[in-house]
Length: 595
Ligand code: C2O
Ligand code: CU
Ligand code: CU
Image (cartoon, rainbow, N blue to C red; front, side, top):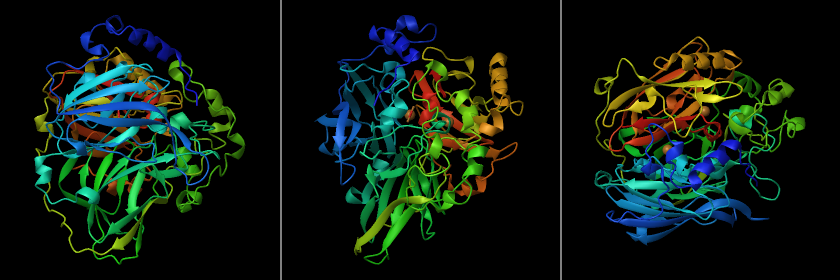
């Protein structure tokens, strides 16, 4: 594995090597807090102290053959309740971290990788300096100290790499793990606990014949479409099986994949019940025929095996769906393999045979990395390149996991009718109801962007400046040439966004993006399909759970999603980006500056 260091990266290293990055952050940015923190704050009395190390490791994912080289988090509990860490074995995933609301946490991080790294606590509302902003990426052999209080309510979050331009590949190679937060409100509920509270981290990977991870190899359009692997792992295991008793369980589902969007559903059509979304329990359970789970999203499932026969098996699928990929891709994968893939892996199958090695982009060339025009005209589009070469298309049907009922028991909690209470936010709670902050998605052959500009470490636009304590309405939408313009951007910017859309981008490239905002969770106000709409929308629309707190929301092509987000507690820079990690790596990321 090599990770080419591009020009951006080198330039950034120059800044961070000097520790004080002051000069590189003119204007808005906060000199002292951009420093790499390497020692504990004397007055910060931690209830929990952890030591995290990221390093290369070899693990047994397969029963036979070579061990798989991964990058992995190891953690040790230095101080605090012993149940803080659940160690997982034979998986690339880091240990599960169990926090309790109100705890003060200190994490000593050691980077023992051969490349820069920083950890982000996705879903936790923490200060900028502990949020894993890529400006804090530390070099191999260096350390970083995190300190934060757990302000979150009970729910499921996760941690993962946020190293500058390295996030996607590092997460792919293993650098991620689950977080649970519990609180008194949750404890008062009769929810499944202990062995009945189970992680369900879903990821897709591609392995070569030596059991080694393959990343984007031969995927010509891989960066544009995102990485799609041909092997589904749950909790780091292939062909996942769970032995269950005849009672209710809580399964904490996380989509830890780069780009794959799952449509969770039982094979026999039994509906699915959710009790929580990103980082928080719902007000009341929601039962759906299926549940959509985009990269970065979590859903806490209530799976009840009561009344099932001992010896019976239930299969959870990712059900067939469409409409999340650009029109050309969708057309190519209609019918046939698309919906009948079953659990079989069609490694290397298909139309792309001869193109596997033609013109793939293995090098990253500065800012416009990703696929080049050459790749596109060289048959990428016409020949059906579109990044799908590994056999399991976006939207295909496949098995996620099998549940075997192994024991009859009589004690099961009942699904509560009410879960937690929280204030339902409306536009009236915001101070900008008539002038929402835009998050404009633009898609072009050269670039995926938010608000038309690539990520830049040291810059925010006026529309990205927010007053501490305010509650904002934010409108996330697709900005295609002419159809829809950014409303409050400076004009020059909105024009370039429109142009990008018009020039070969626009609807042709339009796809679904999971948009993630760091910091506090938000609520979803509305979803609207505009313009040409979204073919395939009816295959996904009943699976969005929009009634809870969210930090990541899937925005379908042609869709406009309005959210309400509080910006409380912490000043500073907080990222927002596409959680399709290949897109994030292409700088489909910006930041808010809270002051
Ligand atoms: Cu899960 Cu900024 O990321
Ligand atoms: Cu995050
Ligand atoms: Cu995206």
